[in-house]
Image (cartoon, rainbow, N blue to C red; front, side):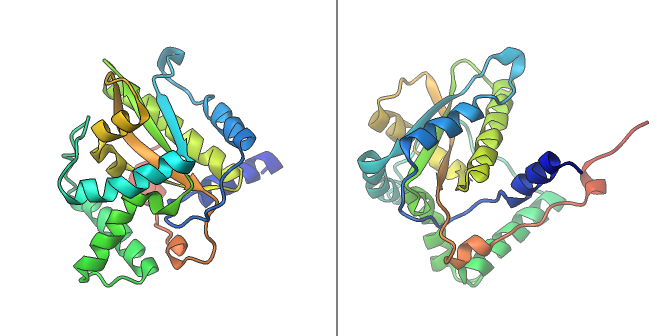
Length: 224
């Protein structure tokens, strides 16, 4: 294995969804470098069908102060339906991931109040100093959403390579209208999800959560 391959393997296996961050902001030049590298993500016919808004500082504090109460009061909107249902092995994986998270956070599975409190932390961005909202312009659909997903993974791997952590959050898509209004974004841009990011808090036990992956034979078939 070459040094390059070993470094890349380390970056990929090190990336995971973190839920506790230090308050230290990433310097503007470093932010620009990271998002410039992420632009190298592949897309169909190089269409690059993503629109990203990065929020920090006072504006992020405003969102952090308002979004939990808005969601708790039932005031939310989604650009894309959240209607996926998991069955069989997919349900088992979902359950296993939830169990790992609650265990790391010290929350008993039957403690619904603490579980809800942990979920609501989505809307305070897990105290991260930055969040990226990822939008898909109209009239793009499933194919272009796949392109946006490749962009998101490229972005998160780049963050990892630069010593940062991240957490992709579909929950942030539950308040699409509010986010657009606060950031003055045209209604033709549809919010898919957000990614909270920053320097990981090494002392918070929730960041010890590591989920497993399916065996290679369960996911990949080689033909010759």
